[in-house]
Image (spheres, rainbow, N blue to C red):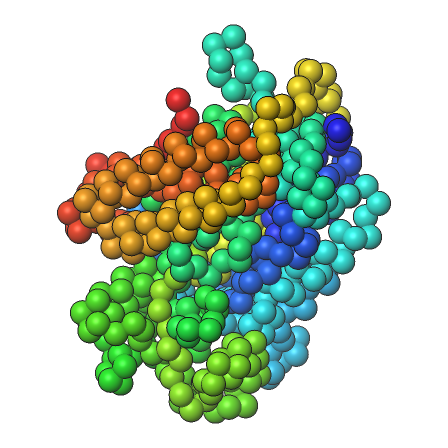
Length: 529
């Protein structure tokens, strides 16, 4: 079956939903989302959105903090316009019904948190479930729009592209989409296709991301011939709850922002050895420090101690974290929280220009799936939701200029060909390969890397990729098989990018090249041959 729409948006996080609200003023919108519409990385964001909203704060300070954190790879022009365009985007969220936490001392002002790498408080938040509040408001707004249709339990399989005489991809016509419940692949033809599929944390064994974060948009874009940038820069959140029964629950950066102190199991502090900001150091510094201390001591975790605050403060400021810790028998008012690093955010992704356009015509990307130049080699805390908001608006502005003059393509599109395939009766193959890829990435392409580890990882991934390729075209496509194909593609891109960077910078640390080198002060670009 073929569906036609003006805008095909893959993903239902802050980037996809905020764009859908605006794009609906131009034409018809179809949102494709893998699970329920609220399931996204946005929904799990606890900390908030960094923006200059206080009269005593300055754009220059936020810009400077971002550039320092980016370790020389942030695009200064991008950083400047994202920071300066933040206030009107924040006001839009408020107008759409997002309830940010107000100051207890002045109800006319918002409570601003401070997180690692920021020189002052500038993070707007809704207690410690900011993402959840944003998703609620945006979903309610979208639900009221008549020309927006949401396809839940659908997953993009491949982009549909047009090639020139040389075989190069020049245009995106839409995507093949799997209806998961009915096991059918449909053709979605669109004037514009927008990737807002989020991140790829499930490429790693331990992650703060939800199960849906399998790098689908990055993998689809790469297979279609789009440029992919800076995949070596994977941010490991330093403070993930360590408990045998907890499934990678994130302890927000804001806990350190409110004075949480990192300690070893014996109670001694250690961050003073690594950075002058101590426990408030940027995430890459903290994650590397914890990784080193854990390996040195043989312990499985370190402690995050915020017991100097009273219970009333903690329950008010961090109700979600407080109650979740309590579920596992940890009272953070009197006990330090056991934590360990976990894969959290990918700073690379589909390369885009200042308006979210990829290297393929009519294909755009915004949010974590994209690489805009904001984060560089390391993301500053709470800059990601801001980036998604600003770039979704810029995509809308870019498309709006030419929308009326751009006709729907009449290039013939062949339906998905499933002939000759059979239903798989051997799902253990998918499960085994999924587990192998994630363990391989965790062990060899983690916080600390080496040439030997990267070589081992690439050999194993190549072997699994060959198996998947053969399996993929012989059996009917399922959600699990599509996701396995995508995490394997993304894993290979991460390894290839890491092998190409012969230095240590930001989130990429290779013990064979411990120094930062000027010759590598450039983006790592990959394009499928």
